[in-house]
Amino acid sequence: MSKNIAISEPILAQARTWYVRMGDEQAGGDDWALFTAWLEENPVNVDAYDQVEMALADVASVVEAQENITQNNENNENNENNVVQLIAKPKKPPKIIWGRLASIAALFIATLTVFYINNQFQPASVQTYATNVGGHEEIVLKDGTRINLNTNTQISVAINDRTRIVTLKGGEAFFDIAKDEKRPFIVNAMDTKITDIGTSFSVYATDVALMVSVADGIVDIHNNSQTTRLLKGQEAVQMLGFDDIAVRAVDIENISTWRDGVLVFDNVALSTIVPELNRYFKIPISLKDEVVANLTFSGVINISDQNTMLGSMEALLPIKSDFANGQILLYHKN
Image (cartoon, rainbow, N blue to C red; front, side):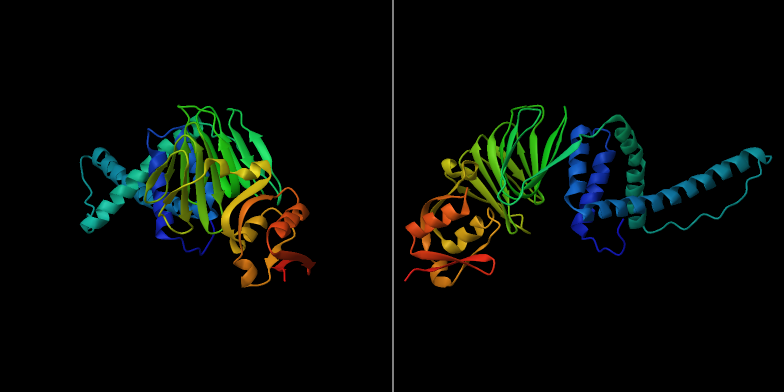
C-alpha cells in the first residue's frame, strides 16, 4: 500500500462495500470479476482496500487476545481444584464503540468466506487491447462479440463462462454484443457501469465527459447515484466529476461513422470540429483566430488521410491551411 496517501471517504466507503460483498456467501464469479475490475480502475482503489484490510487485522488481534483470555479463564476454573481466579472486568466502552467493533468483527469473520471463494473460483484472465493515434482495430471475442476500437483507445477484457466485462481506459469503442441472457455484458468507464444483454452501442470517454450512444437494443447506465435506461436512438452524456446523466436523441446512422473512415457534422463550429479531428492525426491542427473558430460546417469529412481531409475543408469553407512549427494552421481566406 502507498504511504501517506489521503484517500477520500467515498473511495473508502466503496472499499468497505466490496469487503462485505466479497465476504458474502452468495458472492460468485460475477462479483469477483467486478471486484477485480474495480481494483484495476485506479491504484487508489487498491490502497483503500489495503487500509480496510489493515483496520480489520487490528480488530482481529483484539478479538484473538480476548478469546485467549477467555480460554485461559476456563482452563483455570477446570484445572485448579475449582478455585477461580478473579480477573477485573474491563469497563464497557460507550455503546457506539461496541456497535462499531461488532460490525468490524463481522467483516473480519467474512474474510474466511473470501478465502474460500478465492480458492474455489478462478477469475477470468484479463486481455488488453490498444490502438495508436489514427489506428482502428476490430476484436472478436470468444463469445462472438465484436468490438471496434477507434483511434488512441485502450480496453481490458475479462471474459469466461460466467462473466463478460470490459474496462474502457480511454478513447472510443463500438460494441456489437453477442446475446447471452445468462451473462450480461458490462462495460466500465469513468466510474460508470454500462450493462447490456445483446445490442449495439458506442462508448466514448473524453477528458471531460462520457458519451454512450445506442444503435440497437437497450442499455442500462449506472453510476454512484442513479441508473438510466437508454433505448435505440438515444445518447447519454455524463460530465467528468458529476453523476447527472443527460439523455438526448441521436441519429443512428451517425453513430460511430469513424468505422467507415468518416465523421459527420451538422452545423458545428470549427472550434468543436478541430479538437475532434486532432484525435486522428499526429500533426495537430490549430485555428488562427476566433473568426475561423466560429465558422460552422455541415457535411462529411474523410479522416483516412489528413491531406485529403484538409483539401476537402478548403474546398467547402473559406479557409486556407499552412504548415509551420510542427502544426497545421487554419486561417481565413481573404
